[in-house]
Image (cartoon, rainbow, N blue to C red):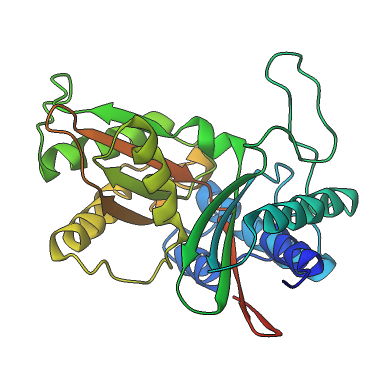
Length: 290
């Protein structure tokens, strides 16, 4: 098995310092929707200058470099023990090189480990064995501010008059955006999961954030819901960083997962404008980053 520690390090560097093209494109398009000389337009222009400088100088896009969440799809016969060790080593090195800020804090003692490693959940690594000879690794860096405004609802919700249907889902998702206001570093991206148990629902909501902003949901009903959430969230007038304006979210992605008849959860993972995700694919000796 290959030693991919240096390749994982480069994946972390790219995710932390270079915003994906689809996200930057959406931000640039959003600038033109805001009024000249407005606070909302100024916020977006400052964000884009920051994006350019971070890429040029290979420095973190945001001071909160987030929780590293890896999604590893590996070929049969590969060792997850070795892959995990290499990923953790790369995270430690990335912290030394200041691509990542030391973020791993013991929840009981309050002590920071200083290298972004902790128990078996930090960094978070999801493994799935796949057929074939290709290794693919998605990395998401999820900031604390946007994580704090994530939400989970249990339907029906009488307060919001939200039933167990897609209309109910629409109501609670828009409520989550309204409650967040600018605290999640808007404009944000919505990752929504319908169903599952409490844990699997939140996991699925984060998985939706790995999709490209300009893709189309293959499920026609969910695609229509995504369009509706995007349009109506942007009608709330919250705007970039809560300054008001036309751009509250850059996109909405929805996934439905099976559930127990007794439960109907809707989980919303909110991602800030610093939508840091990158992908690494290994085919033989070739490593491709996207």
